[in-house]
Image (cartoon, rainbow, N blue to C red):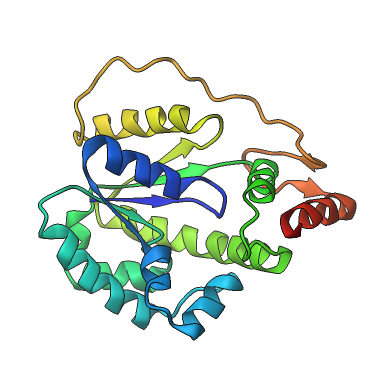
Length: 223
């Protein structure tokens, strides 16, 4: 089992689906599973960039993981765990030993906002995006520390360029972990940071963005 991490717009769900299709693995999207419950409170939380409470999330994933593991296929977790308490739940349940590694997709903030502008999802409001981003940033440090302490490999992967390029970078990591056969991968160097839509994009940190740039992006998202 592997788990994919990345902020909103990083493309982790797309990569999860690509891996599942290519290798006949089981992709488990926490968001999709939550939406399937048709619960108004959960839908509100998702629409406003909030985390669903740990008890609800853990209870849901307990059933999903049991079903997924019964298929004897590799499982790709997308969006779970999302808090330190959820990682601790995996430890307490003995599930942590089934997770080989965690892949963290890194994408500059300018590129993230460009992608969000293009996809035009109803919950991609400025407030929701900023809330999700803040929650993600706060949760990641603790989660990565606990995962590493429990012998889960953690690897950052450049999430820029075309999906096929990102997939190949992920495959290199999976091959290193022994989950797929090693092959001759094309050289796909990390591209330089770019200035996008008013951002001073910095791959390793927060980007600066003018108020006008924010408003222009939000207009495009809501149109």
